Length: 359
Image 1 (cartoon, one colour):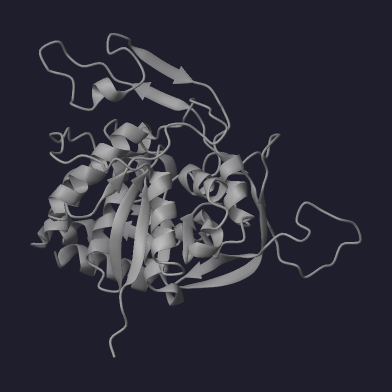
Image 2 (cartoon, rainbow, N blue to C red):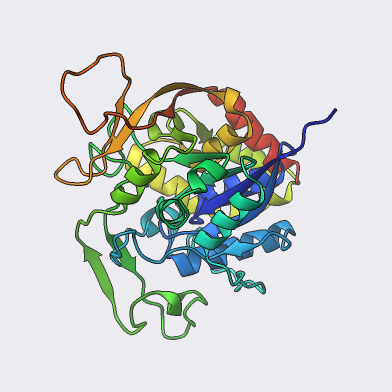
């Protein structure tokens, strides 16, 4: 008897590697994508929603609902880290694609998440690829959500390695405000997404200041009691798409492969400039595939807390429970989660390549 595909909701901030993950999910027979929920991160939430709708139109899957998520952190901060320096100002490689024809559903991301968890108790996996605000809000709104949801597989954390925004923290846990607000030549119209930014188009700005992002949301999710699997950059940095892989994608006839080759320049340039590497980390596709096939990674288990103050704000700290402490700590009596430790990188890259080219 053939197993039923696993129902998944992708909570996403598209994002070049988000686009890759979404396309891989749509070509994975093991899962059924029942919705996308959007969140700020690589782009603002409004643009994340438009990009999600656009990607589903590219894929010919406009039957999949898109629910717009929070525009602010769980503490209502409106100062958000937007990774335009990684993904381009439009989130998709500065291609300025035309606006999508579709619209998000009227339900909010939080309402959609809690509803689907109730409709299919224990059957829905949330793959969280951005900051965890929507998931934390769902936990706060519906006390049963942590039990109703089947699993939360999240990209986040830096376990036993330095972070990628400072030595302590990973980007989905700790966010640095680093906006580059573009100006456009007078002879060219501004892209369709530009008016959605929370600034007047007449302004020319570059803001550089540090703020702390949704560490509180991350700590809520890690201590919620839900079945949580965390895939940190200690693992995703093992999974690299090389220049040679990119050339192979370009030579293929796959619709998704051809689309991605249009938008990858910015992503490759960022990795070359920041890491001096000829390739890109597959953060989001690797996390997605951990939800599709958990055996592609190995895991440890323990209590994870997130530092929410001080110079190590955003640090994910795993207590493996091997030592018993004499006093009560912030980890005492908290539920455990699984944390990915190693990845079968060759198989992960092979699956990404195959599913993008077979489209």
